[in-house]
Amino acid sequence: MFFLKLKNKNLKSEIVGIFLVTLYTTKNQSIMKTTTMIVRILLGALLAYASILFFLKLAPEPETTGDFKAFQVGLISSQYLMPLAKTIELVCGISFIANRFVALSNLVILPVSLNIFLINFFLTPEYIPIGIFVIAANVFLIYRYWNHYQGLLEPK
Image 1 (spheres, rainbow, N blue to C red):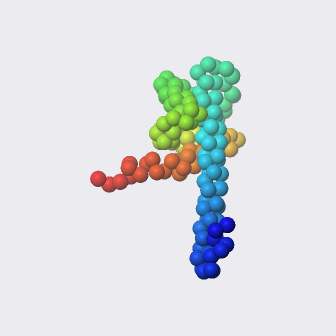
Image 2 (cartoon, rainbow, N blue to C red):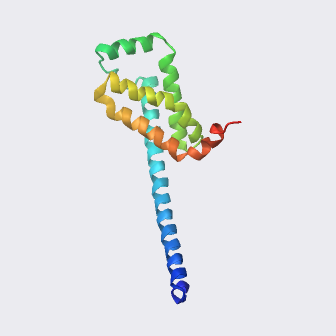
Image 3 (tube, rainbow, N blue to C red):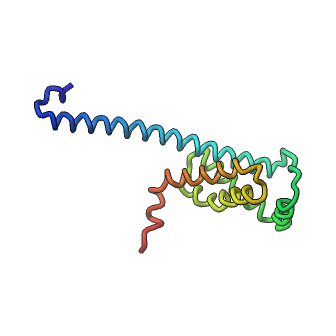
């Protein structure tokens, strides 16, 4: 290689260092890109699956008890809240799977993700892993698409 013939050891070590940093950065970028794609598709599939089950009534409603039953009765009694939340989940899930408008979908689904986590945390602790995955995946995707939000956070 051309840099092995250089007489200046400092220059040689700088070139080798730049090469190694570039190689390391490229490898990490590739890993993060793959991780982002996997998280995005898994979150999208979960949201779309839950919404399709709700709208097509493909699975029986699980038996609920206690505080969660009272909460669920209130949601269903409102007649618009569950269909609205499930529609948002479906649209954002399709967006994540199709890799279109992901930055927008991240912000739209964030309140729903937070509520999924909080409901699971306080009312149905047996489902907390699902809530943790949904909120963690949403926050991870917001982190990965952070450059798309810079304009929103600039004071004018």
